[in-house]
Image (tube, rainbow, N blue to C red; front, side, top):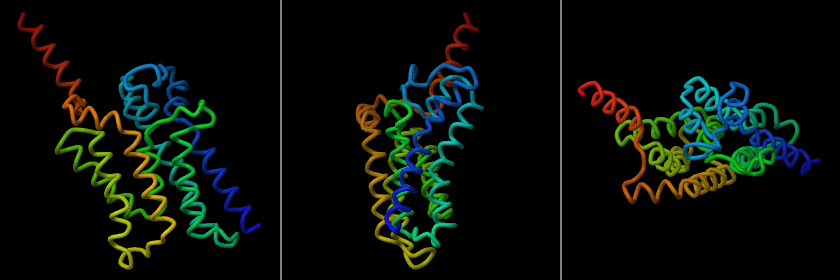
Length: 221
């Protein structure tokens, strides 16, 4: 049973991660499938392009929750069943992989930013907040969501190892799972990286600025 419980926990986490809330939420709210417009990425940022901020916020929260919940449950209740740090690493990574390759949605998933954040919050609230703050700082100063995600992904394992013995005691298995998530997240952003290098990546709020400029131009005609 020492092997069965961790495997069952990982499978359950993967299935939870496979719930593509971008698709589910837009269907429930009567919006277009996010896989058919914009970046075609089933994530909160692309759902925002539908024009519904509420749908984007709900998607963001639920995608984050599905990464947080399995990790938190194992950390809170797993010990009596032999679910230790190795299982925490497994379920966190499994939930993240479920988002990237969801079994319920033909293995066509998102980039995993919100789900990865949820996993980090489950491991430690402070780790999640530090990573989220990194995303926010980069996003505010540079106005690139993709760049903010990439920088946050790089710093997440650094934060985890940097304060080892101060805020928490770092575990090898958990550190490895964070590194793997960061690497996969960067890989899922490969097209964004190419556009950033070419100077063609869209900035946050650029469409609003463009729309305002067009409206102003029409007003002066």
